[in-house]
Length: 199
Image (cartoon, rainbow, N blue to C red; front, side):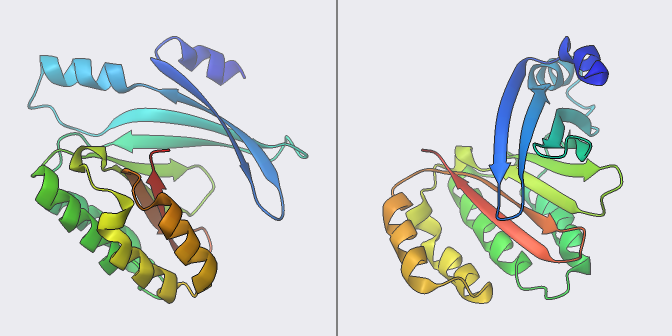
């Protein structure tokens, strides 16, 4: 709480989140520093070094002592090829290596629509956690979920997700706009990928 209050004044937005799975549930509070990044780059366009974009405070509802602070580092104005290079590096230690090709295909399709250098790319780190992950904002591509459904079906098969509920989901969200993709390697060395859409 003390660190959150100290960092709050520099943030332009605060997000509240909640996540639940079969084992536990957690609260999340995120501070965003996007306005600060934009201001710095406007003043010095050639200084495109990585910058902190989000701070995420997360804690278990039943066991508040289980807590973490995640840092989301933005790599401003990266070309699409550099983004793919960094993501490929994140997946290098994967046990199976079945995801990175699908992620590259989504990015290639988005770049065809939006051109190069239009996407906001973040990498996530957390003290004491071996997880290595990324988040890529693809809103500027204008793609819909329908536009990448063949890639998602490939992922569904690779991850052995049951076909009937997956097909129903694709039918429901197909017309919706593709938002973000995130992924990487869990602390246990398992690869993962998540696609977000605009509701």
